[in-house]
Length: 407
Image 1 (cartoon, rainbow, N blue to C red):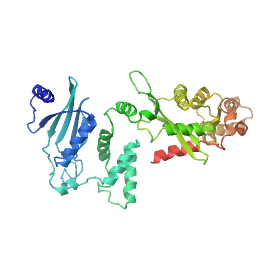
Image 2 (spheres, one colour):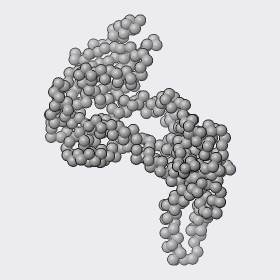
Image 3 (cartoon, one colour):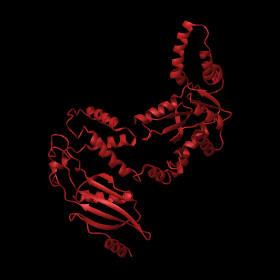
Image 4 (spheres, rainbow, N blue to C red):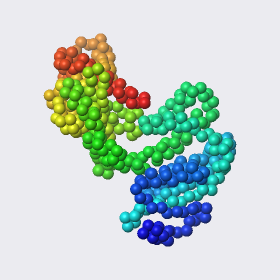
């Protein structure tokens, strides 16, 4: 049956315009598209046919991998293979996935005639190949969502820490184009699909299914924001143990998610004074309603618990969400953020100027009344006469976010 299907598909295809291209048809069974391609790319590399790393998605079902030396030379080397790995090589392998009558297959086209370099010359193959340990470090930086410029700076620091001072040595000092190629290859190897939204959807519905408390896919057409609420069984147990006393809530926006989505962390304080992350939210849009939904899902997973105190920054979205889900909880503002609030500092300066000029100012008094006096019980000492584990700031969450950004 499979032979007949392959033969029928072969008969329906036109002859390749380039006689150098070898075409084969394969049945794709249990392997995913990514696994299927990686298995064949590995075989090609091990057989000495070539190393294909630069992927270009030509369509929804068509993927082309180019030779690692396919880039155009831009420097003084003019593409000399003993100097640069940018040799304009035209070799490639492509995969076109097809489905018909419940049978899934792949049309594989291989153009293995390399140009601009010699596969059998070890000197040419070693030219400018990035150090393996540095490559692993770059992969780690990419997985953290760092920008290309940030990755280059970190690579520079990494190489200098190894006493590598020759900045012309591309093994240890990568160029912007190198980062772009490595990033494309990394995403092609690690993502379940070329589309990030589809990859996230597959990941959450498979590997992370048991730990995702709530998931709402991101949809531009339906104007539906992404919402992910994550809390493992162990984290839920820690929240049950320490959460009734106090929880800490804060958000960060840089270095955690590649697209700049808000990343919220919920922490509790252990008996040893250490912060324990018990839940995470990733949201593409922020509002009191969305945060209320996230907190409500965590509350349902734990079993309708009510914390005595909740520490937040001076963010009204967070405060309103906490009041909605935990109406009996005492909301405390982080002293650090109260003292560092830009608007508070700005108004303080204005207060000094106006006091020097005049003794009465309705603007100042109204501001203090609306923004600070009304919430005084959240940050002043008299409002903290409840047991709150001697916690006056959100440093537990801040430290956790800082560690994640620096990993």
